[in-house]
Image (cartoon, rainbow, N blue to C red; front, side):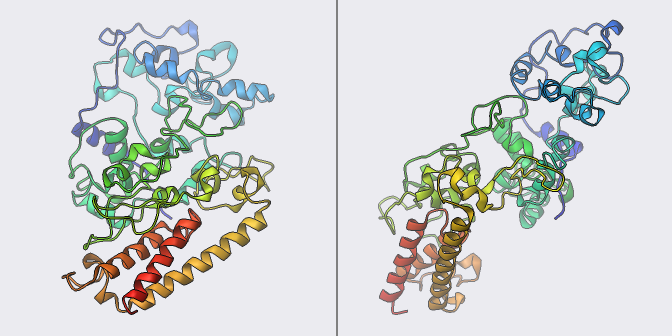
Length: 455
């Protein structure tokens, strides 16, 4: 799978379109700072986080609480504080001119600091009014991937194998054509999501017009993780860790069918920011439910137009007790043991049934989890296949934009309800695992409606 990384020109062009507050905030940034003191050991392009603190006080203060700030101490605690193979990722600029050398001479560059990600800032601090000299701002996975890679923490490699690493092809083309940025782009484009929902900027549908698809950014590290601060959003972090998640990892809202509520991203957990329903309900005729209904299936709800009754009762999932919710199964993690048994970071987001075993408080072992999963999924798939066969030729019952008749007036309400239930379960993608009881009710209802329709 091709990796998709943002390029600085793309991000800069987008920033120009927004109303984002300038990067420099507070302090005495209008005054040219003094030159770097040679006695400090900072004699090259790196100036150290303390210098950045003069203007970026809020960000610096939050950063000091992260594990990045104490990255060298982490090495020293395991006796590797002078290991050159490790120092390049645990300090600023190790091995480069003006970079970290050792505690005695360049202690101000210890740890993962601002310049580890934003590049050397000497030119910037000597002329803060020159925008061309400002440090790089990029949400490319290349930034985090410089260090979060390899057998001990293969986040970048595993992420690159996931669908998050690629903008959905048809959406990417539409973004290139100058459309859908303010709609599909909110979840399918890391550029759009970062500049709008995260940075608070304003863009138009033409924001990525003519940008080469290969230069577009998908869902990279900075979309889910906040680089500068401990957020406290992790449900069950390892000792002293935080994961710096932008949104809570676990949220348990009450099931509801109200469309305005169901389509409000703030109601959901981190994954649900994008993996939630877009508001299409069974009376819709152009398109069925979006392929993002995972959170709603898990919660046990579906959108219903005001005044109509739910097709099936709202039903909470048996998996609602899982501590990390989506992450328990989709982000199973395992520490590094050896080169033959490397770490698992969970960033492929593929289901790993080891996360379903006793450690998560559910199945007694992995074999039981696999057996239950396979049985359920086979049952659900057989029901879906049966429903589709009974519906017959898609030309007679599908949505108008998905191969069905352009005029939908000849399709009865019962068949509209069946097709909605069929697509709602299918587009969830878990084949029942997210909420077995709820899915079984939907399939049973579809069977009943088909029988009543003489099919």
